[in-house]
Image: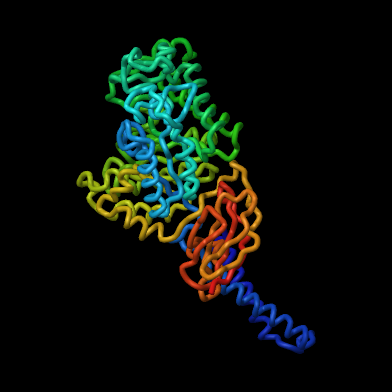
Length: 522
């Protein structure tokens, strides 16, 4: 992508060159032919510079931006709508969510595949989820995950498999679990807490099991990412002290309890990161932590907030993951509006931008679509759209993800209409991560137009194709931003809505982009 200063420098240089040719003209030690050639070159440079100036990146149309939605399966929040639905109904409901995401110009879904040490897919390691059939361990008669992934990819939606790492069961009685449930087979792995069962993060066996579950999915399914949410150690007020004293005595090695707990989480994050990328370099791994790392009152490096601290309360140290490079992205859940005293969005978003600045870790913001209209603090229809406007001031913010899918469908207070109008007027390609490999495929070959239909030969290695409409001015701004991006399509064809000149590029699965081919539509 071009940047502002080089463009301005190019324009200045072109003007200087043209001015020199005009002032000195023929006879200043050169022939008229040489002077004419020089003037022609200068005119071309001026024209190019003018085109470049016209293509100054426009922040309203980011070329690359993650735009996602969480699809929660736990407690049947989003999908399936309720347990026991037919396969056909489950499929139809899921497709409805995806189509809503595409209509809003989103480009990623984060689908919960492991709500509580259970599986929304066929697994030899953990039982079928009760949220599919109503009965834990009951075979639904099909493996939903290939369908969930394929339908997302058909619509150019990146598919991130969302795992909850430590929640073992919503029940507290191990005997109520299916016989093949890891917590029933290894009761020493779990801690009863707040009426639920949690895996003990301090046990090496637990880390090994979680890594095995994650890599099993990476190995067997064509996912684009592995995603963890904000649940690590239990939140405060959910059952008193967490009973991990025995593990601490065995493995603590003289550390303070809080440091040991944070170290346990850090070890899991690092082990998952390494295991995922050893298997498939292109698969992304990231976490959506609670929105406050620490408050300034606790740590001068913290944010000017006064809410719960993820570092101190649930032992999640997102800054260490960023500094150690053990995540590809962080997606803090900034579930508060502007002006909320304890946790103001205008304070927290810039704090997180500063936390990733200078690193290769991407920053996406978790947005509280579910809160819109739910209380007085979220009574403004344009609050989320205003968040996106604020984000533009911080280039470290590379996208937003909305919780959750049912709210995407409901569109409370018309909030998503405003988000799309103000922030998603054009499609966007995915942000590139240099450590995830990939390369641009060959540009489309044999591009042609028959009426309004543009078609081309599929490029090897292409997951999708970007289509740009060149404006009547002729300014080709496709490298600068998305102002001319009209579509991202899965197959080698596009139906134009108007006559004109179009550019088509090939995209690999990570959205590395080829050189364009030009097609005229009459």
